[in-house]
Every structure is written in C-alpha cells, then in structure tokens.
Amino acid sequence: QVRLVESGGGLVQAGGSLRLSCAASGRIFRVYAMGWFRQAPGKERDFVAVISAGGGSTNLADNVKGRFTISTDNAKNTLYLQMNSLKPEDTAVYYCAADESYGSNWYDSRVRYWGQGTQVTVSS
Image (cartoon, rainbow, N blue to C red; front, side, top):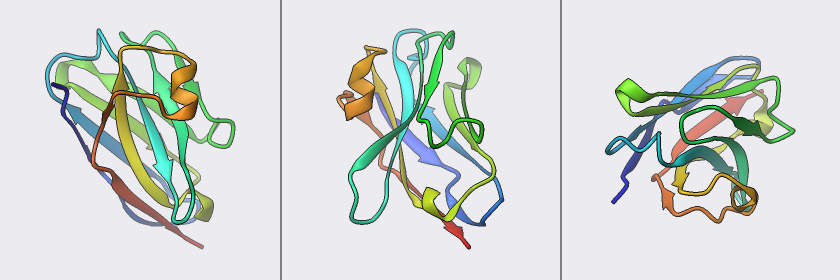
C-alpha cells in the first residue's frame, strides 16, 4: 500500500513562491511515477506535473511551465513541487499522486494513489 502525505501549502501573495512536499511510504520513486494535480473550487481536478520513476523525465501542464518545477529526493522518499511567480489562478487544493504508469493516464487523472491534499491560496 502506498501512502502519500502532502505539506507546505498556505497563503501567499501573487508573485510569491511556495514549495509543496509529498512524503511517500516505502521506496516507491524507483518504481512509480509521481506527480501533482490541483482542484480549484467548483472546477475539475487538473493535471499539474509528473516525474517518471527514477526521475529521468518530467512533464508539466502548459499553464505552469516556466514557473513550477517537480523533483524528488529519493533518500528522503519525498516529492516536491516548487512553485514560483504564483498567480491568483493557482489557488487550489494540490494533490500528490502516484501510479505505476508514466503516460497519458496522468492527463485525465487515471492514477492509482492519492494524497489527502493541501490548500494553496494566492492573494492578489
């Protein structure tokens, strides 16, 4: 069983930065692709970023490219999402996720494991 626990959310002004963390049970980063989704109030959950098992490849949604970075620290079993130049439209609950597959399944939220979410609020 994979357990994912997010942290690092909070309130930040537009233009600011936050780093989200996702602590994962077990040594899963060499086996599972890991990623982030977000869901704003009244909207569907959207793909944000994914990193392949082992960290050799990443993919980010177009609306966060150049501002967000996804990375892992295998020694700490932790996934990160560094978010810079935040905008009010980045406000959402951010979810960590994991899946055996690194592919198109991530773009329509077809992943197996989910964290409980952490709130990010960007004020204008």
